[in-house]
Figure 1: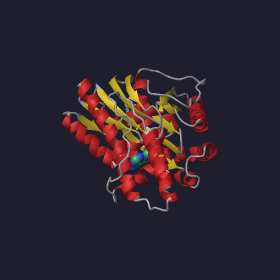
Figure 2: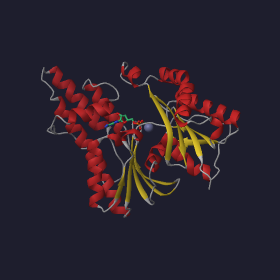
Figure 3: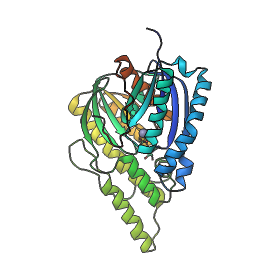
Figure 4: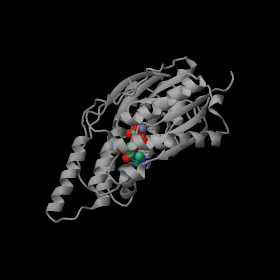
Length: 334
Ligand code: KG4
Ligand code: ZN
């Protein structure tokens, strides 16, 4: 079969990214323009600013990607775009841009779920091996999902309240670490020991998670210690939080591998960039004789290459969207 090129667009949050992906796994070119520094001044993503910046930058990001690839839009086989979940205004910038390209260049339009995109980040320079267990850990989601084949999902469990990335960001904020807090907490934790006694997230044997209790406990602890004039051992608290939060992911991933007998495990989403998480899940995989796949660091956080990878099976099925495509703010994988 002739090589297939997908031009993919991702604008669901605070990254404007466009990539050209060949045959679902080969990244020909990618540009990721992050707005992180702008939002850091406000302690988190400001939706109005995010969509405005996407609008200002998206044509430049397209031009940059095409230049890197040495290609024109007319050379690609389809246009893919993230349509959910995310910030509505931000998603709409990408969707409308994708519709215009699709219409003007007469290319099929493919709609991609951002979370499924994170899973398919594992298909870049790689092949997904089914059945697999996916641990999805991002700023908005914490889920354990079984995947029997391309686009064949079964949700085992998810967070009952906060996502793990959200907990990282909120704990970082109370410790005065700038947004996004995940990388900052990870760095600080390296200098500390997990010596704080923190409540365990959920002590049951379901596949659900809960992070709001842990987050609130830490926020209260910091406030109380400040009021008493006591010093917080910041690095120790960061290490304690990280261990408690990640150990729960490891425990439930282990449980799911044991109960299902699945031998392929993947990690997806922004928090998969965390080295402690990566090494702990590697131990779980080893203990279950399972094969672990985690995306390269640059494809862990939001990027358009993963959207191009996730669009490929839809392209093969000719599962195309029409111009009534709209943005959706919330969604699970299935
Ligand atoms: O997948 P992502 O880029 O965006 C969403 O789809 O939500 O994930 C962003 C989340 C943020 O909460 C960020 O703090 C977290 O991923 N994150 C990390 C690390 N890098 C990013 N959390 C822990 N350790 C990291 N190294
Ligand atoms: Zn994401």
